[in-house]
Length: 276
Image 1 (cartoon, rainbow, N blue to C red):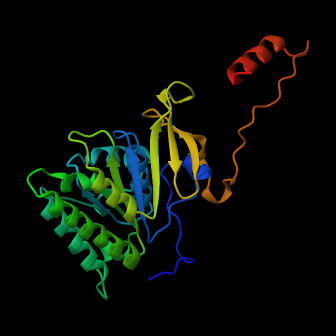
Image 2 (tube, rainbow, N blue to C red; image 1 turned 90 degrees about the vertical axis):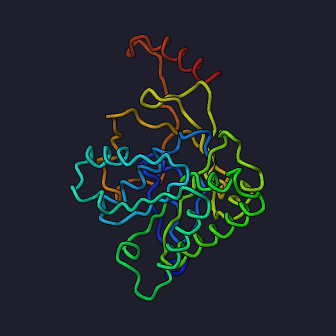
Image 3 (tube, rainbow, N blue to C red; image 1 turned 180 degrees about the vertical axis):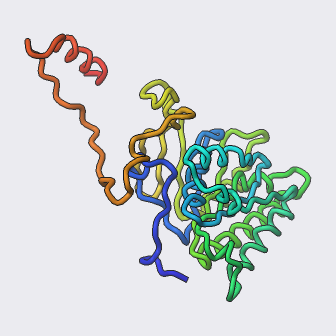
């Protein structure tokens, strides 16, 4: 098992977000908390990056809403090798006990002396809407909490033993609402949490409304919006090694003068946009 100093980060699936936030580390559990499903494009991007690099990815579908076509379209758009999807190992439990059993088997594989290549060669595991399975009214609440704790322990074993990042997604707006006890179990087990909040009116990116993403470990909140389908950022075409670690957020100075047409009008508009 790799030590903490040897562990490396995994891309957020968005080059601009990689510049703004530290990358999540392998060997840890990351909780993504969203209103509905607004952060799933990030997860799809993370998976696509790993598959494109030739590494396998495991996806445990707890909410029964996983659609592999979302990832396939990203791979096709990036002109990735045709066998990339073969490295995506997705599974779904139809009950809380089946979901717990899937994680238990995954953790057992990770602890084997010679684990299968599909696990040892990968470094990303996704468990989408995991806690929803354990809120099933057909099982006792106490049993649901116990099964969730056991499942989270299995994911912890998988992350640390195989040096993988385990991404767990959850939603605040569900029907029925996720019990507080289950939400508390998720937050307690996670090493870090990225929360999404609606930003309301304001900056838009690629025609999409902006969300506010808050990373708990550093207490930083940044705006983010998914690019519209078919659009990309220029950062996608820059080698990762040459991407700078700082982003300039200050507007260039406006100098109204006769040399700049409509300079005074531009300065007034800029001050109004800044709220000054």
